[in-house]
Length: 409
Ligand SMILES: [Zn+2]
Image (cartoon, rainbow, N blue to C red):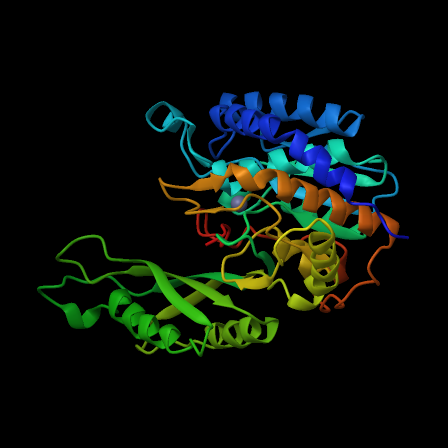
């Protein structure tokens, strides 16, 4: 069944002013990382908007004090997924207020991803029937989606498709593939001794660590990066270090690459006699494979053509997002449907508000077409041993705090 997209084009254009007003309001309502009164106030605003846009009441799913917002649908064909937390601490807005110069809006979180949320909510208003559309707005994506991940995976599994409102590229391209990532914490145990009197009695954990810093770096091949990040060793200048820690960030385009590096990291063995090595952490997010995005990209491209928009391309993005979780389950997923802008996580992040109506219309048309003719089943099957196969989320507790590969970019 063909869907007439003209109502979306006209409806979104008529709301051009509303889109900008909403963006100003949402950016001004700060949502810094971590549980706090600002996040709760932002959740109140979004709850009111979401309830009105969907015509039904959303549920607040509070996990570790973090208020995620969920409007689920009994027969959920499409899930719109976004996060309303930003990387910016509370108070940023007072030194960097929402500002509009020409059609360029700037302010904390304007691009990542408040424009995307405003577009999603406005697109929902344009849809004649939202009874089979779910909306999930989480608030811990920028810190690794530690509490929201099970919720995201649960809702993705009961959806036919997931559309993610992270920013597009600066040119408006969608994101059809993302790298996956792993985080490791390698702890070295040595033996303390007086560094000046009898260093030979010690086992220098710092020297042991140095071997592994160089070893893991050599695991990087092609576009797979293996980066030593946090390094520490020793306590006093006159003591042979008793312990040392090395954290490693791994990014790769394929599961196979993540597994290859995982094997190598786990095969590391001590170089110094009596030194001990412990590896914790592991694969955190599988890549978003292009195979799960391509069927939806095709629908988006034909919708864009019917809307009279410039051609929409799909590009691979190195940064991870929550789309990695849903795509890894084999659920058709398309990302980059948010604002057209740039410089996320930077002081100059911006969005082109002149393009918000067209992106809103595109999202509405894409959603309507999926509802009318869902794309064929899972494009890839979940890998045995992943959360999908086990029916539960992978534990994240082995990953050191603050080291999760989380943000886009
Ligand atoms: Zn984001």
